[in-house]
Every structure is written in structure tokens, then in C-alpha cells.
Image (cartoon, rainbow, N blue to C red):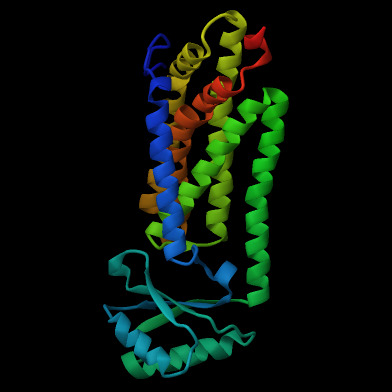
Length: 305
């Protein structure tokens, strides 16, 4: 099945400067958002502390929940609605961490009962992560992403050329920063689940890029004298139908998860959706055109000959 004919001639390379400018602006906005917010909105996995998930039988005022819990002297309380607005479910986070989960849960339950009455709510889960564990998970999460970049760089440099590898890794860094930036702009929680989503995005994006790189290599063997810009354009156009079909199938699955997966899966699916869109864009407008930009600055041996 071909949505777009292989002989389509869309000038992707001609939009290279515009694409680079748009990407730089998006990256700058993402970094600025992270600076303004003091980094990502770290979840309990990284920040440490305790999270209590409470579901009420009816609508409640968040300010009343906060004032009630401040009365039991919980440290650094933040309250966020969880799931749909009609679920009346809330995540209560506190910087306080303790091994006595039942004791902490009991304190929260007693305070809420006094304010809202017995049977007005249900404590659904209580989780605690120590500060040391959170710091360790943060370091390992960052290392997992960085090591994935390094491994991809080595693989692409071995399979293609170093300039292709650099283009591919820049696209991955581009995808990662913008995805994190979107979460920062929306003030969404950054947890281990999102790290897993980032690694998934990296795998998807580099696969999309390698498909285009493979076609570039094949076309270069067929026509050695063809201008590199024309060759890259032709290769992207020839793989465009495959790229669109792949994206559509993934988006359909993600849409199903977003609609029916519940609040627990929502952020994971949303992160992958953002990454898929940004990754497809970077494979077309960043990774491959960068090879041409490199060629113009540092011509290959073949061109010099």
C-alpha cells in the first residue's frame, strides 16, 4: 500500500534552514521552561517522599484538602487531581518519607475523616521513596538515556559514516529535549515511566532515520555523480509512504491507550505520542539534511576526488 508515490518530489532539503530554525526555537523554549520551573516536575521516583492516592465519592475543594493535611504537619504538600475531573481522585504528595506507611496512611485517613466524614473517600495506595533512592534513580535514568545515544552513535558510524551518526544522534537529542520540554511546559510529572517512554522514542526515531539512511546509501551506489541534496530529497520522498503508514499505525494504538488506558497509562502514551511526532519530523528535516550541511562544510573524500 502506497499513500504517496515514490516519484513524489517534495523539496525537504530546500526547507532545511527553516526546519533548523524551528527546531532551535523549540529547543530554546524547552530549556527556558526547564530553567523557569527549576527542572522537570520530578515524580516521587526521583524526588523522594510519599504519595497518597485518595478517591472521593463526590466533588471536594482542593484547598480544603490542603488545609486539612497541613493540620497534621505534613512537609511540602502538593495536591493534584488524578484522572478525569469527574473521578474526584487526587494524588497527595509530601516531601516526608517514612518506613511506617500504615502510620502515615492512618494520619491522612484520620484527618480526612474528621473534615469530610467517614465513607466520603477511599485511600487507594500509599507509596514512599527515600531521598537517597530517588537520587540514585535520577542518575541511572540520565545514564540510561545518554548511554543509548552513545550506543546509537557507535552503531550508525559503523554501519554508515560518522557524519550520518552525528546527524542521527543530534536528531535523538532534539527529540528528547523537546519531549521533556513539552512535559515541563504542561507541568506534567516526570517519572520512571516517562524515562521508559523516552527510551522507546529513541528506539523508534533512530529506526525511522536508519530507513532513510539506507535508502540514501542505495541511491548513492546507483548514481555516484548525483548531487547529494537531490539524492537526499529523493530518498526521503521514496520512504515517505512507509514513514506515514508507520506513524499512523502507532498513533492509532496510542489514541486507544489515551482514551481507554486510564490515568496510569495516560502520561506514558502522551510522551510517546509527542516523541513520535517530533521524531518523525527530525528524521526528515534534521538527521538527513544535517548530512548535507556536513558535506558543505567538510566535503567527503569522494567529492574531493
